[in-house]
Figure 1 (cartoon, rainbow, N blue to C red):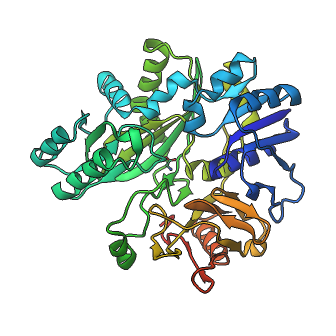
Figure 2 (tube, helix red, strand yellow):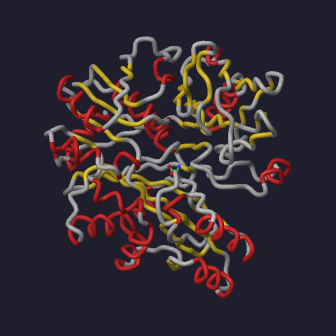
Figure 3 (spheres, rainbow, N blue to C red):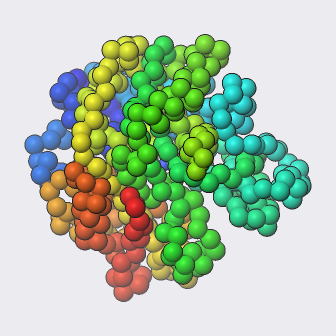
Length: 454
Ligand code: GLY
């Protein structure tokens, strides 16, 4: 079988890698991809190689699939899904994993999803939606509890600003609605009550009729810095949210009791609404971003139409079930026949980000603020056997080889029978890497969080 993964980030690289593990798959194409995926990981020289194909538009993707007899296309991220890639492929009779364009609104319109959850009684924090900054400002001055200000539309996982007090909330409204840091996604904001507790990323596959909830979950680390990194936080003017800086799995709270509660209180009612009231034939994955508070109350923060990144990377390594079998079941409507299985390892994924670097004039603050590009990546040949590197924001240039190209550059992922062991391996290896800041005497501008898995 031939599979094409459409995407270019770490999650998409990992999807391609996981399809490559399938006993049914002998070719994996990756588009538009990134040049990092062409490297063969140490200890995995026997792997099927991923073919990088640079397809420029949806027409080229469908033509490629028809010419090369691609059996299944998996679309990894929300933007091509929202632009209708699944619809374009299905029109030509090509099998896919991922929701149709119309259904992406469950991620791209927070107000729509929040109203849906409220209607069906799925727990979520108090919220209010605003289309005018004045109304939003008045609201946060008066409500009397802490809030999170969220851009209503897509914002690469960075659209939620967690506020400590009223001035913070006013500044967040300003950034999103007036400065338009997330563009049109900030035309409306959702102002939500801030919750404390433990974040849980929970996933379920849907085939239009059945649901396969994964009985395993992960924890993402959203803030840019560790809480005690006071100097960089001060330099940054706060500790901003990112698309995710690292992840571990199994989450310390994984238990049959909690998994069953999540399925019963959140997943089943939501999917029942999607299938039976909205009438959506949703085929793909749903990602439930949840909070468990100290009193054991669950709340939904958001629902996304794709795997989380970096949550998918750790879950994929732990999942023993053949991903191609899941993908085909999603397409064919046979998820009720899939048995999920997990290995006994712990996994830790630490993301190497672009840190502070010298710009031609002044400094780049680093991800998720303005970051530099084109920094040579060194140390990859020193990675130990068994360490998985998933590439995200990278490019290749003749003079330097692999260079940085995005804020989240690559994932260093390690597995071990203990969480401590997995942490130790991931950190030992990421410390061998460097991004060479050519404007600053070759200093290392790679940044990573130290507390993933703690
Ligand atoms: N890790 C959070 C996200 O994928 O949005």
